[in-house]
Structure formats: C-alpha cells, structure tokens
Image (cartoon, rainbow, N blue to C red; front, side, top):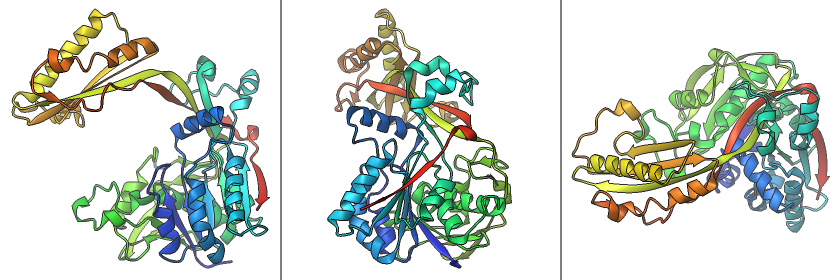
Length: 455
C-alpha cells in the first residue's frame, strides 16, 4: 500500500482549459489524473448528439486529449478517471482504444468502463411499477413531463470505479458518475479503504469536492483578495496529496500561477454544498462542519478531522426535459439619460408585444450597468451613467411567438430612444429550453456494470 497518492484535477467542466490536463501530467509527479466533464445540462446535449449520430454522445475533447497525454501516462503509470463517457461510454472507450493502437500501445492499454447509470430506456417500466421519480423540489411525479424527457441518469458512486481500477486498467471512463467519486475511487483502491469506513470515505469525498471544479480552488473565480492572485494566465490546477489516514493536502505544481490557501479552499467548500451537516453522495454522507483547514506552506493547505456517516438507500437521478423556447436580445444606450432611455425602450417593446397579441410564460428585463447584478439592492441608478445595456428575454411554449419577438428588437434602433448601439450580433437566436428534474431512485433499482476493454 502506498503512503501517499497524488490526484490531479485536469478539467472542471466540459470546455475547461484544454491544456490544463496536459500541464498536470507534464509539470510534475502525479499518480492519477481526474477529469470531470459532466454537468446536469450536459447529459441532454449528449443525448441529442447521440440521437443524430449513434457514434456521438460523449465528450469529444477527451479523445484528442488522450492522444496528447497517453504516452506519458503509460510511461509513468499515471492512471486516468473521467466521466467523459456521457451517454455513450463504450463509444468513448473504443475511440480511446483506437488512439492507443495508433500510438503503439496495442496489447498494453486497458480501459475500464462503467455503465448502468442511463435509465432513459427504463422510465416507463419504472413508472409502471410505482417508482414515481418525484421532483425533489416540487414533489410532482415524473409522469407530468414524461413526453418531454430528453435524458435520465442516476449518479453512480465510487464503488464501480474502484472495481475497474482493481482490474489493472490505465483509464476508467464512466457516464454519470458523481464528481467526487472520480477522486474518492483511486483513494479507496490504493489505500484499501472499506466501503463502510465512513470517515475516510467522507474525507475522500471532500477531497473530490474541493478539486472537482478545477482551478476554482486555486485562484480562479476567487473573491478573496482577488487582485493579488498571481499569474492567472498560467493558473495551476489543484492536486490532492492524500495519505491512508484520510488527511490530505491541496496543492499545485510549482512555478504555476494562481493561489491555494485557506480562503480559496473555503470558497470552493461552500460551492453547491447545501446542508453542511449532510453532503449526501452514493458513497457516504460527509459532514462539512467537521472540516479543519491549515496552511502548511506556500500553496499548501492541509485538510483533516473530517467525519462521515452511512450512505442513504437512494441515488439521485438527473433528468432533463424540454420546457419551451427562449430568446434574449440586447441594445446599449449611451449618455445622457442612458438608464431612462433603456427603460423607455423596454416599455415601448412590451407595448408592441402586447399589441401583437404575443403571449409568453415570462418576460424578463435586465438593465446591465444599472441593476442587473444586484437588482433592487443596487438602489436608484444615477442619471449620469455612461451607458446601460437593455437585455430582454422571453420564454414560452409557442415557438412562433418567440420567433416574432426576435424581430421586434432591431426596429427599436430607429423607432425608439436615441443614442443606441450594440446590435451588431444580429437578430436573437431562438433556443430550446432544457429544464432540470432532480429525483431519487432506490439503489436496488440500479446495477452498475463494469467492463474492461483492451487495445
């Protein structure tokens, strides 16, 4: 058993810095590279892609990335855990295996895949058996939106990833696994942690939570003393240095930008935390009120004292469904009386929409530069604002009405208040709204499947 494991975060979301994982591999010693690609809306995007092309449905960026880093990973035995598989895990794995063969790793590269999270094909059967998948926020049964569902995926935990790692694979690719499980699993595998050692599982879970958003814990998007954070252009992504006891240090490679200190870690800890006493995952319940932080050196924060409790008997399910259409348009009004002009344009546009008989579920106006960020807390804007952006959006089930709205923005340029600009982008685009439906499902209904594929 190792006495220390280094897990580096390389992606915080699909579209994060492309070279971040390359630098994590090349700039210093690590044992694992963790890549988190999935968000709630991502699954519906991938499901649409797969519907158009059966070979699609996963994070395409992952394959060229593996082409760049696979030689170094194989040479240094850096293992990769990634939820890049989306809704086509095997397709993603086969693409990586093909890259491996092209690079000369035929017969050497082993890729583990974890499936079983996608329950879209099972929804009718589940509903018929009385598993209502009620919305966790509204308590509505899923049957109310059944005909509009685009994707449905249960969050799998660390256990199937551990099972794959135990079979000596270089890369593990999952579908909708928890962000934290991608970090917890290597620790369970390397240290032999029991699936009922709740304190250690909670520690590994919080380690995963801290690094799951990439550089957000190492200086990016950091409010505390942000003006003094050095060299964000070369921001270093975080690394967990864990030991078998469950204590760990968050750090980054030397000679990289950004900053890791207690305030930066605190900001990430409260991200999507919910109840600090009950951070619920498939693996355990982590108690964030027990977290202790200590600066132990430059860009080194020790995290210790974490307590956990047994996991629940349910898994969270991320469901997406179509919820109508939207469009957002903008115009910018200049001094003098910029705010008053933007308000007048908003009033004129709404009157015209009413005259046309257009009906929307919601019309939202924001005055960027006056009160869009802070709303009523911004107070009354002064009349001498240099410029104000009118941003107005509509949403509704009638796509034709939304399309007509997009034709009413440009006419304001010559038929509304003066000193207007900012329409160079052209007519607003009508977009489908994908809504989120969180639900719970009994764990007994989900059976993760682990397979090992070879190049």
